[in-house]
Structure formats: C-alpha cells, structure tokens
Image (cartoon, rainbow, N blue to C red; front, side):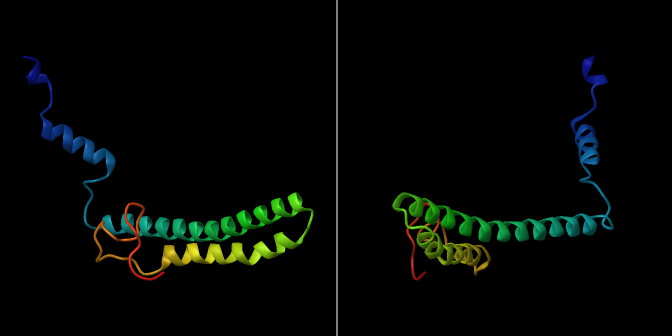
Length: 119
C-alpha cells in the first residue's frame, strides 16, 4: 500500500539529477565546463601568488627572528630575502613543472615514496 504512493527509484533519481543540473542538454554543457576552467585558472593563479608570497614571508620572518635573537639587524633578514624568493620560485616550479604521469605510486617522489632521479 505504501509503495504505491512512493515514487520509483528512477523517478527520484531523475528528479535529483534535474535539481543538480546534471541532466542538461548538450548546448549547456560547454558553458559549465568553461566556467569550471575559468575557476580553475583563477585558483591556479591565486595559488601561484600565494606560494611566492608565503615563501618570501616565511624567510623574512626567520631572518628577522635570527636578527632579533643575535642583535645583528638587518643582516640575516637581508640574507634570507633571496632565499625566500628562491623557495617561492621553487614551489611554483614544482606546481607548474612537468608532471610525472607515467609513474606509479612507488618511487614517484610523492609523500609516500622516495624520490627517484634528479631534482
């Protein structure tokens, strides 16, 4: 008796897909992909900027702390500035550099495996 009043699984699934916009026509799909690509490009640009700023800021903070500890201001802070900039560039290089698509989980240089090969 209660099953007559309940919609079938297919009807509920179709209704849910319609609410989420998953069952749109072929003309609307590229717009969604373009928006996703634009968001992805914006996210990548923001991440690159943050990597550069974060590397520089951390190095300057470390240099400032060492200067304050040893009373040698501003020498360590000045010395750490190019190191921070280089660290930011290195992070961006790792982010944007060639990916290792052909590698498996072992020896790929990821957090679980040892680095294989050069830098």
